[in-house]
Image 1: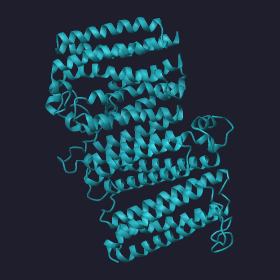
Image 2 (image 1 turned 90 degrees about the horizontal axis):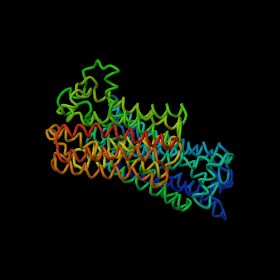
Image 3 (image 1 turned 120 degrees about the vertical axis):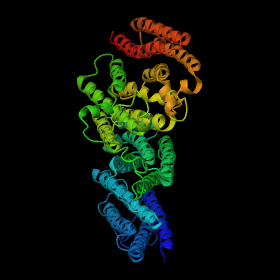
Image 4 (image 1 turned 45 degrees about the vertical axis):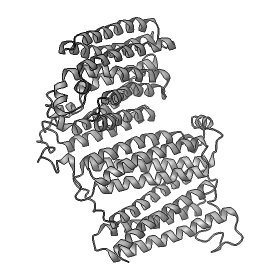
Length: 606
């Protein structure tokens, strides 16, 4: 066998082990794990069972196919050490695969010997189920890397990867955690079946229920959070390590994870039938392997590291050093965050109809600031090239080189991670997920995709600024009511009024760097008309809570005054589209939103 045939064999071994793992899931989902009794490696004390029952046949088939998988991995390791020279990464991948195949066999044996099969509901079984899933992930990852390197993939370069290495490592941990929570959830579906989704939710929230039942409700939220992060990390890594493979893997990861979430919803809707559990697990394996291959491509020797300035002007991203805490604070854009944080905290008062509690208030304030600051720091790294050519942004620390792009990204990921954990711990998982969603929308949708492509950038991308009130609301109530989505819509339609007024003021800068903001693309007359239309829409939306009976006369009089001024200033800009009227509307729009939220909070308290 030569190396070309070996690569084909390696991919084949990977495929075979995926099938064997899926069959193992079928054994668990059908409750056939005790089909061979408490005997291992024999089946009911026999090497080949005679007159087997269905459960025995299912379990014995799994053992037989697992044995073949063991032999295939053993042969892979032997061939790798025979065909490839010392130090070649294929040897490492194949050696790790054989090690994890041994541990996989031992974990499988322990399930049988300790009776953690069939309808056993002990905590020990849940723990071993998670260990089993993690070991399978490591086994498949090792096989995938061995096949990738055998097919010509470059060895890994782990040193000097900075935030990219951190982002990928966190992605692996997140997917591993998601898989383990899925294993426990699937076990709960087997042992504690429900008639419908409502019953599952009610039982999950009932004190005194079995821990497998109570953990079931967390898995969908964990899946959404991890999916958001994995897709975000994939596209950011593809931007910072640009290559054919990283771009292809990032796109495939986004589409595949979307399909995985859809499959998860269908699985819940159908009450977790066996075939749907198998499909769901197959997609989980596929997502895991795609992320592992993305890591291999991004961290490969020879991959261009954009944030270190490789392939660009020397030192452009390296930084001059000497940064102080003030520079790192500037990286978070405190003035931009202030209004976002204000709407977050006022949304808490609105939801609670009073004071939500000092501890929760401080947790959301700190967590919200850190997540928004992380988004702004990443934005400064991505937009460093155009920021350097715009007067408004020319003093940013990434432009002046006081902070290197590598350090800025590490700082951003640290902020985002601590923010997510803090919000989950101090509030709830929904709050942390919404905060993460706002970051991802700002970085991926607005900064990386829309900003340099279309004048619709601020209309669609501006939704990132509408997430803060959802975060505040969810922190207090643990859910999102119609009123919470009204707050989202209010900021969504307010954003074009606010930002296009700013765009009119600095349109020459946007024109110089080629960013297609509305005044640059369609001119001032169209821009001021759009501002006036969005001002009217904002005013109409601000009246919706009155129609829903959520707010009363105090809010009515405040909002009436604020909206009249907003429309008048928009009309003044329409009649005289000049810098003076644009500045006036821009400044008032910030005051408008702040006072509108204050009016809602006061009205709800009274």
